[in-house]
Image (cartoon, rainbow, N blue to C red):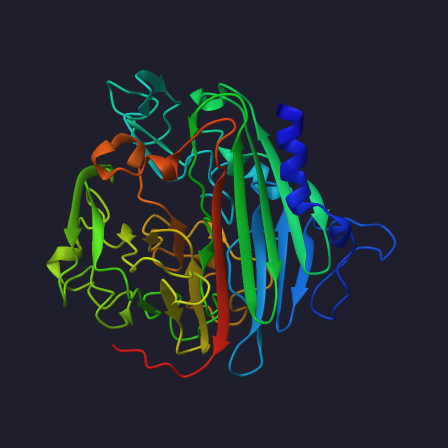
Length: 416
């Protein structure tokens, strides 16, 4: 049974058209020998589209570089990461840079859940207390979640790459084996990805995402080293998941009233627009100012996620770079890099080299994370009736996440 499942899944991603090849060479993008498929000297696998190039690494199936020309024709690397792939496993404090958190993204209350009357305890790794010294909850799959592990490259072309991982039964406390495939591809100013995960032996929760850290100025804005001036818009984001002071869902769904701190749906506004509003304090947890918020995507059914409107738009007036995010997922997490502290170095492809005002590091609020996903911790909120989106069994439907990040250069108005 397991062999047939793996073979069927692999056939989806690895075919004659996906035979491994090396990305074409570029003046600004290193590439390996044309005769030997593989990574460049820094351990990165480069792929290319029209007007866009990106690099990926097996560690966490992570995106490490994404290159686009801004409104002045200057190439900007707009995602955070490290210069060399080997450093991801060395720097243990890296905050999930560009990886795929799994097997269950975001937080799990009390590190526990129940399936078919059986309770499971997974490894905690966040918010330690005297009573729970390892943590009061589990974040992004635990201390050895997927974005801390090496995936296998199973297909590689000039414009796409597919990674796979086999997550064993019992790893981090999760029941059953899961096999997953992560495919990234580039087109005409687009970055698309598809994530498929299959429960092979036991019923288990699965929820994935892309945990990419963005700065659409390539961390090179000579006016500010923060990303709070980026404009953000979620036309379907009129509600959010209510959370407690450690960001665990309470079970309530609350409205984002027009003009409120969490209103990004009635009109675009800068991420930092509401930072003078008292409501922003504690908005991302205890003693935290900013966003780490799960917004619901309230679209009318049926819809074609590829055509019927983006779920989120982020834009920088300084660089002119805009990204419209299309996804089949029904929630969207915005994190405003509240816990960056200026110790994470920029890559050589980023930042300013001649401006002493801004160190070559990522400051607090110097980036943002945009996560397409489902309603967070729904496995502990049965009244939401999200089981089909979170619980998967052998022989049943696979977990599937799809998204398309579509880039453009324009002059979209950016309110103050």
